[in-house]
Length: 217
Image (cartoon, rainbow, N blue to C red; front, side, top):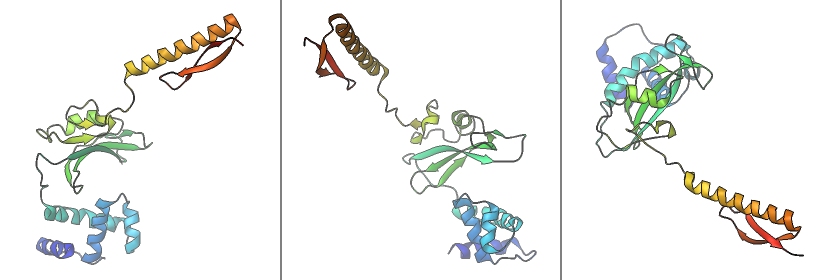
């Protein structure tokens, strides 16, 4: 079905130098290239062609496939997901050494949770920039008015995105537990040092440690 629809659009572009691969074998690597993270060389080997041929196939058929998909449909009730990806690029003028130990660019992508359809793609920034900085500079205007947007912890400072909650205990609660534990252990040590008595367990502190009090032998 996809091959037939692509063939109808390709036939309208006129004729040129014959391709090494038939149209059926050209549509498949073009579709796989945008569905996976394979390199052009990995896509070319199964079809017995070179890396340059695979690149030309993907470059020529990608606009055709995009025309078939059309603009993304959606409503304000759809859940969107934002995340950044590091794309290795050899151009040093627009890249920076990133956490993947390669010179890369940071690109922000928004997809629809249902169907994983790409909604928007931001401009490329140097790979050493934080996701929040790149997102607010390149994507904030594209998602204006849409509130159902989620992201990971890297977008906590972005008001446009809802991030996962911190599951750690609140600071006040952790501080109270620490103070009770320290008080319990201090009392036990001082009692043992002053009276030379043994200790027996009498309770458990909020942190789970056993509190002991002095008991004469």
